[in-house]
Length: 375
Image (cartoon, rainbow, N blue to C red; front, side):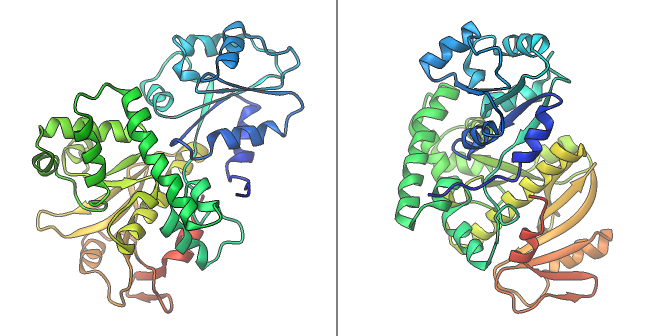
């Protein structure tokens, strides 16, 4: 497997000169590799992982040398009282000490609750590889992402067998370690079955009641399982848009996986998942690096007219997107929403001979469009 420079490398390095940086993202998405790569740009970096007992002792004793210019604290959120600890380090640090804190679920959950660390850090969300981040990108990269997903190890592995072996171990680790460490689960098999069934329902509105009947448990239990999977960066929800945000959260969400390789059900479903991951990463970058609120939704009427994705910036609709594997004709639902609300719209097609416009709606290549996103 070869290393590659991640798109956020220089952005994080720039922010480190001004504040602490919190780097969050899914398990094995490359946070530690990126942090160490940034460390190579400093003269005296120190990397400490709270899961390592020797490193943990150094962290508690603050035993790094005075000339340290980059302090990387990995998995620090597992330390009791870590917020006050890192606040104390930041408020008393030498001017030339930069601080990078990395972690996943609980670090991001903390960030959302607000704390006395407010104003002391910049957030950076690291996602899977997408076409916009791959150097010298070509059509073969799209096929590779659909087949292997965008997590660096399976994507960069020598062959598909190695990628499949990685994923098998990855899923097992998620279930047996991450999920059980995150919250005590009384019915382990029900949680495992929830994850497996969701792999087959990507892109469809998710009914908690329906899933609960299949698994034979309460809908509120399924909802909690989904919340745990979301908190652990295994899945993310795309909710139907409504001007009343609370109402949109009550309606059925669509579920997508950060790892496109986990999706079951054929190329069409994986394609929609890959587009969802790419759009989410693009919108996260707009929030993290431009400071503008960005959200991903989908549109659906009571008559079940539906458009796959709707991008919103500062709560204003930016673009409607429908995803097709092969299609020469425009989606009737896309045409309906475009005409009714006057919203810009495009239809993304994987197997497309040439790009074109039909009226005001563009039919574009999935490959070209995803490659043009922010990251």
